[in-house]
Image 1 (cartoon, helix red, strand yellow):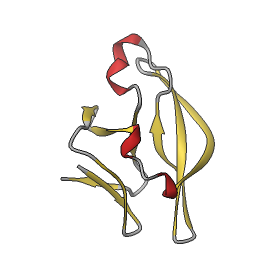
Image 2: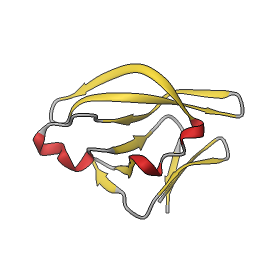
Image 3: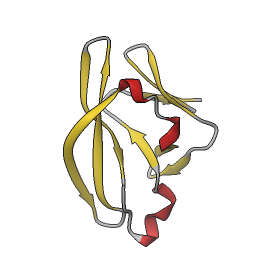
Image 4: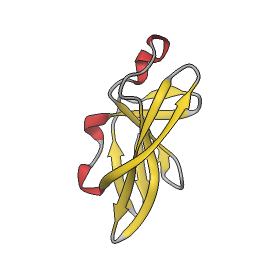
Amino acid sequence: MKATWNGVTIAESDDTVLVEGNHYFPIDALKREYVTFSNHRTTCPWKGQASYYSLLVDGELNADAAWYYPDPKPEAEMVRDRVAFWKGVKVAA
């Protein structure tokens, strides 16, 4: 699977986990040169607290476009050390 935004590959891996229609990529598949800080947080009732990254590509910012669960609840352990995308990031094979 490949995650792309603004014409660039943000993450690529053959090892994604599909949860609720979202592909979670291994955190080390993330191309860090396109990732920047976000202090945004949300809470999922069964996965726990999500933290976010923003994407920065060619001077364009996509705020809070990637999320991950640093300490997921036990029933969501499959998303630990993984990152998923939204906000216009295309994920396809």
